[in-house]
Image 1: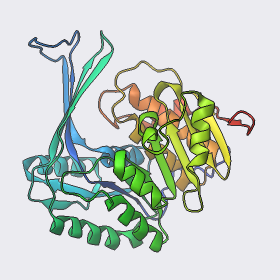
Image 2: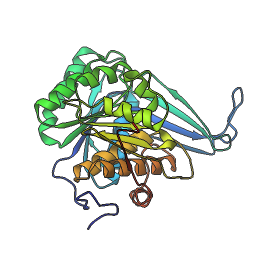
Image 3: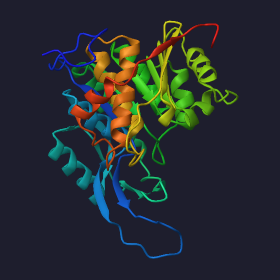
Length: 332
């Protein structure tokens, strides 16, 4: 069956033969509280609460599978929190290929105030990982590469993890001919980009690591996206929240604003974007269509409670509201 928004794609309900591999080195128990009228120095009782397996790569896997794809998830898990995360993966049907660590996986807390329209986050740093655990991860990653169609490397690093770990994984993926997408921040993003991932994705804030002097206009950000392309990195994506996103490929760049949705939480919207982008890419979509699917998924995620719990029918409905436009060289 052909899916909506399939112009410029070979979209069907069928999954590619090989799954996507998502890497989450700093997985977490994600706890989200809804607290109307949240303020400091007060006792609050939430009106809603959710605790789920979290971390950026896990969020990617969740949305990718919601769209009909298949995923293998790897990274580090440890302790009781790690077992909670593993149980969540089993429940959601995501294949668990995580390395077990001696430390306890972290907890990340988000407090959403629907009245004040604020979102407060408290994210633990994560457990210290040891050199032998890092080596186990590298070996497992290499063993998984022949089984997958593409890789996403997402999120922060736990203490003890070398800052060049993403670069090492990018080199390994390239040696196996596997497409690799990087979505991180700070030194891991900078060092990883220098290693030449096929796809780089960052938000406006994270972009400052690579292009600290870029302006705020769509044209400035589009120019920055183009500047990230090189002989190895062929696709660059910069998300801008409610303002939408830009995607650059082969010296061309496209932009689309995000459709308006009833806002609940932005947590996980960038991950939903990357999941839908990779899903559309695996099905032969061209750059503007990949961008449109990504923006639709990010918007769908912003309208629901919990990271990555947007639904396929909502993503498909929003896809019809996204029309990317190509920006000419004179504007960028």
